[in-house]
Length: 478
Ligand code: DOR
Ligand code: ZN
Image (cartoon, rainbow, N blue to C red; front, side):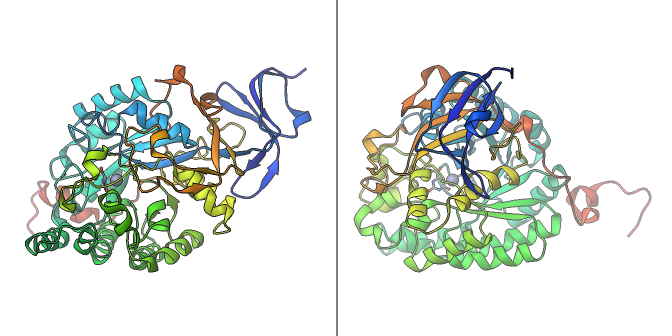
């Protein structure tokens, strides 16, 4: 008689990065206990009938803004992680442009307290890497972070972008820690100058935002960051790749052996310049949604691995913050954590990619890139039971009024989808069941920093770092 488990999900189709196959999943003590034939499952306290549904590793969205503390009218950690739960997302990495900015150990400790009390899903916290926080790198790591975020350009929160000199020093300091630095790769001086000229010329309509930030803003930033990464050995991740032209510096850096990874977001794959007229300020996001010709190369780059993952840049704002007449006063970004999986699986249904590709981009690779694999990102015996159970034959229409996020305005409103997460499980516990939030799961999410294992660090050019050149040299005269 085999031991009793907590939950068996039976009758569904398990999806892994290699294959889809009919199988049941047994869960015990929050871990995957068995994956196999229904008749091989041990006795269970609970059985979930997943007939007709697909069982996916829960998505890991490495790029969300949950606004807590600071902007409760936009989102908080409870509403943001509830949105994640409804989107089949079982782990999120939250960005540091909250109030106060997460750039000190104190602000980090505060956010940990907030998140621990409210989270429905697991999370990692980013700390900002800027001129003022280089000195805190060690203490921030000790305080529990998933990685660093560096703003090469301004966006919501107006976190100052470090000079290239400060960026080099920051990379030197982070390189030996092995942590990955995620980059908002848009060069500030280019876009600020253009925005000033556009404003002076009286341009206030939505598309002026794209004119302020042509692709060169991002290309220049990606190339420069890759050079600094190559020099220092610091690991980097390029957030929200929006243009075809960024792919060249990314691919070239990868070919040189730079530890660089990249993400794109559904809005760069599915929206284009043509949508500015329709959505006005609602579509304003940094980097901007671009010309249609960028879409196909971004898809191709995902398929060939140049771009590693899908994330959302979930950037909730209140409706009045998104609908101002003058584009320069409209807050940038929109929600996405809840709609990413339905939108992407709808594209899978249309034949743009396979469902194997999708779980690689949404779960397996994010887990590998941030040292969480195989605890997260896979449905393997011994892994955390983080699971999205999805109906791939559900036709529905995205309705901003129905979403969990506090931000009830997005360019996804009215869009048709053919997939819907029905249940979401985090470490064996239902956080969303039959499309209903499991209120008792509030506060059950945990920070994943404790289970992170990055590969050994590989710092380079260590003899020329700022620390090395300023250290007293024993009697040396050069
Ligand atoms: O449009 C954006 N909004 N892009 C970002 O990088 C930040 C985000 C926000 O925090 O609102
Ligand atoms: Zn962002």
